[in-house]
Length: 300
Image 1 (tube, rainbow, N blue to C red):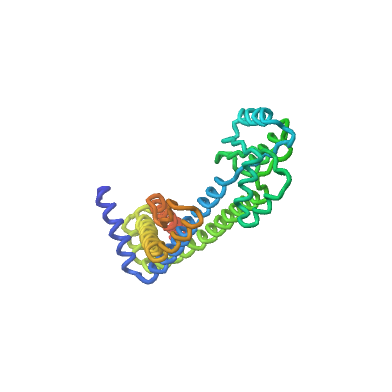
Image 2 (image 1 turned 90 degrees about the horizontal axis):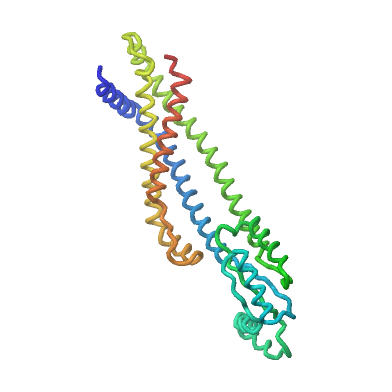
């Protein structure tokens, strides 16, 4: 038998196996679809959380408070030294501008500041930190460097908020990893169980093939392809579910995310890369389950 004929036989046998026990294979396909649908939702949610963290991180500014006794030339000297550290965009905020900003932010209460005999606010430097230096460790190092500069009295970058956001992101990623591993193991077990039933129901056919000289690979190949087909069908159902989810709830969620993150943020739940990943994951789950089933119960 030629290689092409063998390949055609394997695929026909695999498709026939699906038709032979539709309910059993439906359970496996549904399990894979549910697992991949949940993974797709988690991936989309993770992407939104990352965008949220990036958006909030983009608003992180390091405020450098300067000594009140510094003159204008000394303030510009500190400004130049900080710029030489290459820490990002550095802006000088004179005391008068800081007071005007504070009055504007306080609204009606800001009128009380007009009664002050003198401006209590010092000159400050506002540093917009680049994305690669927004981690808690990098910000702590940057704050230490800035505090060491002459004329600097304090440095503030919202340390508690940055630490909390980073902790939330780590917890979400760890929880998603644990959930993925649990779902992965469960799905492989269910797929293997369905293929074990398929193998058992076709044991007489397998015995005949062995009697006429079929090799182990020849007997195993259709069952491996059955697992692959289960994975492909499960991935297709998962993508259809994600597409439906995006069409039904996408506009509402998109409005919410646009409110949080600003316009232009992608909230698509089915992207080309996500689709390829889910298809690859579905094939991996189907093949993984079929390998387990063939290895344990097909003693050929």
